[in-house]
Length: 310
Image 1 (tube, rainbow, N blue to C red):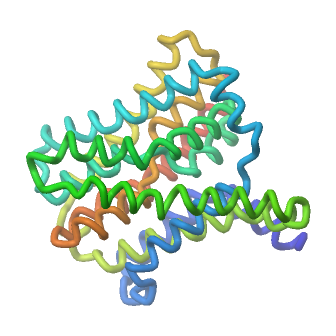
Image 2 (cartoon, rainbow, N blue to C red):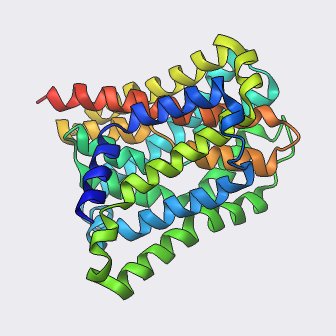
Image 3 (cartoon, rainbow, N blue to C red):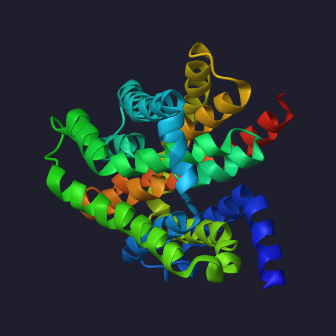
């Protein structure tokens, strides 16, 4: 078990590099990754969210009540800023309808668990990061379909209720099961829990490999524009998140956490929703796949920069 924990720490440390390498391999030799079925994505996401439930503690939710201002600012910034940025960038760059839908899905989703790892590496307020992730994950079944409907109902018919049920099944139920499992088995799982962050990173890598390999030609053919839009969306989230935190008089640790939370999305969920509900537009899954690669890469660079910032 000691060896596994050591390997787990290595995977956490080099998360961005691992995901980037997997994505490049899946892009240039896709045939070697086609065994990772697209329909595995929902199950891999459920596994990630189950792991999130396993590592959450009651104390992680206390900040929602003890310091609600910063949690609410972070949550509102994520659910307002990121969808609006996605909408604006999609219009400015005149994205194809499918890619525009995919970008909106990324912007409308809650933050991902990777943001907690990046906040820790950045020496930000980890408790605040975890609280925001937990809170906006709980809000996601209602808020995410609402945002998608508001921004896309004039473009395509939005199955709001089905989106609500899907997010409940993919996100909320696994988190609850994780919390219950930890409550029942307690310390018996302490060693296994230490492996969960690395396991989640490997699951994210499988999701990225699946999407990229099955869409390699489409990714290459979309060219520079999609990559530019996704990177701008991600980096703009970091910048505006940090600005909002400073304008609301947060200290440096909280500002780091807000910046990372706003900029990093649960892009795996966005990809899953695209595949499940917009299968007639396969390109809708690409923004989420590309975002999954780049937000881990840029997040790691930002963590290095922030860790030096006192």
